[in-house]
Amino acid sequence: MTNQFTDQTTAEEVADVLSNNIRGKTVLITGATIGGIGCESARVICKNHPKLVILACRKQESVQEAMDKIKAEFPNAPLRGLILDLASLKSVRKAAKEVNSYREPIDVLINNAGIMAPPYFKTEDGFEGQFGVNHLGPFEFTNLIMGRILASNTGAPRIVNVSSSVHWLCPIRYDDPGFSDGKVYNNFHAYGQSKTANILFSKELSRRYKDQGLLAFSLHPGGVQTNLLRHFDIAQVLKDGVTDWKGNAFDLTAVKWKSLEAGSATHIVAAFDPTIVDQNGSYLEDAQVHNELARPDALDEENAIKLWNFSEQLLHGKVRGITKKRSMNWAKSSLNFSQPKMNPIVAFFSFKKKV
Ligand SMILES: NC(=O)c1ccc[n+]([C@@H]2O[C@H](COP(=O)([O-])OP(=O)(O)OC[C@H]3O[C@@H](n4cnc5c(N)ncnc54)[C@H](OP(=O)(O)O)[C@@H]3O)[C@@H](O)[C@H]2O)c1
Image (tube, rainbow, N blue to C red; front, side, top):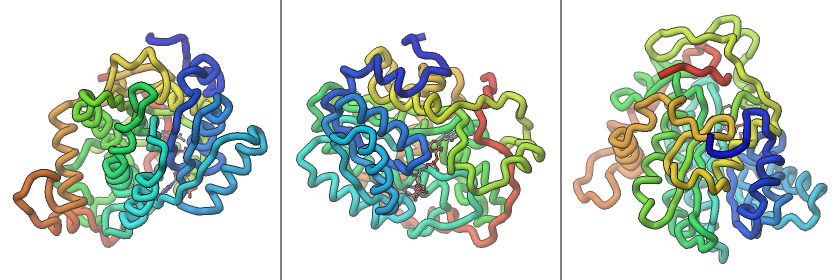
């Protein structure tokens, strides 16, 4: 154990201890809609005298509602809104341009926004929805604002990518990330793939930018009843059971539910805890570093480089810095589905599968 926090510690309790590490920082958090883990994390951060908290949501009304809620409790909270739709690269690039025009460097970026197991849809740019919103959008956004993150002068800047224990359901399907144009689409496996990507992205960020002082972590917040569960009937899914990409069943009785307050604690640890700085690139659960709880390929260095290059290829048709151009059509076509196939399996709970 690297700190005194437990699975029941609330975000507010963590922040009380880490208050000096929050004070004076500029934090950008995506997916800050009221009722979610992002908004609760932002609220707790605002209690501890940050320099600025940027709330990024896809809708203006969500930004305003979150701001109003936080301001009702902390009238002087230094808040700024940002419109960011991760299902649209145009929106991602517009938001990044706005951030790059800020006077303040970004000390902490929390890529929290996400969707879970919706019926099949494509992002504006034609990517399978969950891979697009949960990984490719944040990947592009983060890279575009990297200059403002590395410009941080409050100590090591941090990037936190919010994953899930459900990453266990599916590794990166390099040869078929789009589930054979939807013919074999499984909404929970697609979620698992995207959440595996969050861990690998953090791992590679930590390797690429460690010499420039960047810290990057991924985490599982715990099972929290939020709007994330809107796309499926949870009772039915629990009844049906869950299997991973190999067809192995998981033990549904191992669900570990948390309150919103406790489910936001690991965000605060990953973003501010000084006791984890020597574990750059790690995966956290229950407010602690728990690399042994991640699937080994999700923390594998070569796999992390592979996903980085794969993502560049999908987004730009080439790996940045490499001149040999390859068509991105192969990649896009493999991410396009035509027929949604709902086969829900439960995946949002905190099962612990031993490595
Ligand atoms: N809750 C859990 O049990 C659990 C477990 C493991 C991991 N997680 C992870 O925790 C994170 C936060 O989830 P949550 O439980 O707080 O869910 P939530 O309340 O549904 O919050 C998700 C946030 O992401 C935003 N979002 C969705 N699509 C977006 C898009 N295209 N562009 C920009 N923002 C978008 C949502 O905006 P709208 O309000 O506009 O939809 C919302 O603000 C997610 O990454 C999730 O995968 C949650």
